[in-house]
Image 1: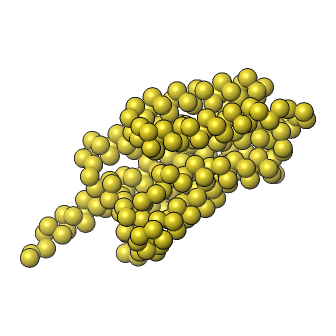
Image 2 (image 1 turned 90 degrees about the vertical axis):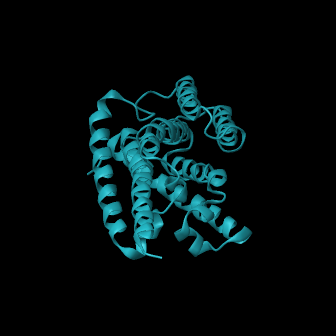
Image 3 (image 1 turned 135 degrees about the horizontal axis):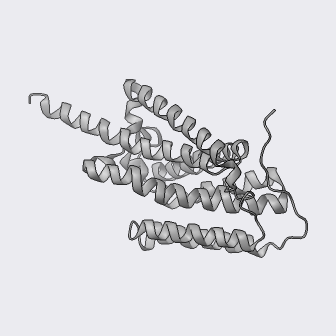
Length: 253
């Protein structure tokens, strides 16, 4: 039997600290996607990760409540490593199959150099996106919700907020990914459908992330899964686009 590591529910806790976390998330989302996209992104991500941890501690959460207890580092690393290996295998098989290969073609990756994609996959994704989102959603927000409303509502609300977090960055993605564009179509309707798909899929992925956090007791496990899907996805996309472009150049006109 698997023992889930869940923060104990406490009655009578104020709701305003949750409102503060939500407001900070909204402000950060607008900054990252509309005000200063990619400008000092790593600094923003690290700084706000610290801010969220500070809010969690001030709210009374322990390090274990937030998935950062020292006793759970090893299980978190093991689960995270297993996830990375499984995702790499799925991506490799998917890249070999013609019908699924197009899903990896994110044209933004085609504009990057080898150094650029390495920076994106090994620095910006783990130390920016993964660190910030896992600390914010699976560490602090989830712990604060679980202590107030219990496990079920903590999962539902945190996953809903995580899905909505992806509204702004998903706008226009149907134009950058041919596979997605072929499904949702183009124009305004395609854009709306692309956003809806992003919100739903990321919300559901949040359930997986929280499941990993619960069974391992550590946010290191969902961090591994999160990096695997994003970091390896960017790397596979870059390689496949390079192979495609090289093949097109070698075809005689």
